Image (cartoon, rainbow, N blue to C red; front, side, top):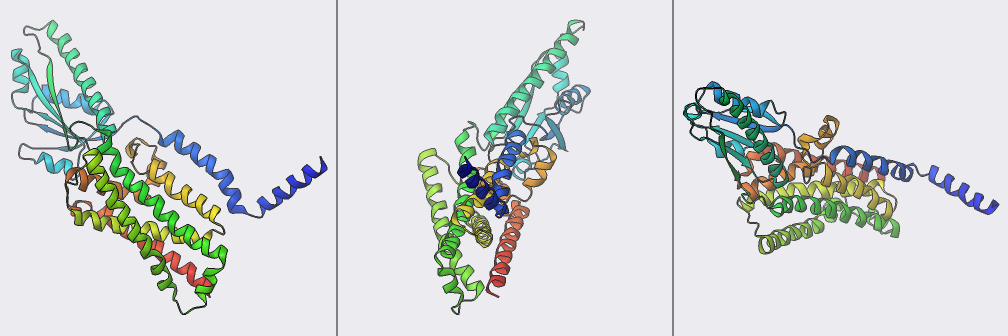
Length: 372
């Protein structure tokens, strides 16, 4: 028993001397609990909603109010008759558009079918499926109210007939929604881990110290470490796109040059972050744990890959603003599924460039300090 206690005491002392490992042991379960408990939320709320009311009647305003008051939709635009609906969804001004035609109220009063159109961005298949269900429920409730009102009226009110149209992914295939997210997730994890493990491996073997006594400058060492993995990651991206087209029928509707520019910015940032992780980690096991914790989990849960960001609590939504995969995923879905130009996503591209500059800059500073 004394021997067991001695070994246990030694392990406790060793853990206390390594606060980073202790933080990982305690912090990782707590972080996963918070992420799973709050970010894993399949409810869809606060959908950006635009209205094109061509009737401008009391009946049309009642129907629009039913959507807004449901708490599922946030009205962000009131469109006139000349509005370009494709541009509204392409620029992500709104995810759903309710089109109420002229003579809507006249058709209701005359007992004819009153048709409305519900246009939905289907690039996020999971969200689109949920939103379609909400819209159907709202229209059904509106029909029930009209039926009750018409029972005592001189003219019976006909039910509202709405026509949903899903753009960019009409069949709501989950594959077309998941593949762009998989590209961002896989590239982030592989790029971070490849550079982090590569540098730490050289630390453990002592070869990094040999490189430092040569005439290599820190910038040259960083570039030399980054370029091979950048080329490998670009090749992996191309393979994924080809496989997605052959296996799943996913076609890139936008410009390949736009896709390349966004991918370069994203990968340089991921590789720079991997170098930064390697500057803190003292072993390959620690580099792997830190890399997975800080790149894989955010890329899955906090990027909008699977779970809708607007449905998360406010603190988590704030954290997602520093997750590079969130911005890269928005560009991927826009360029691949919508065929949107990269200029539409300049704020997202600017963040990726800024993240790459910061990650490489901090890694370079730490490398210079170590050399000094």
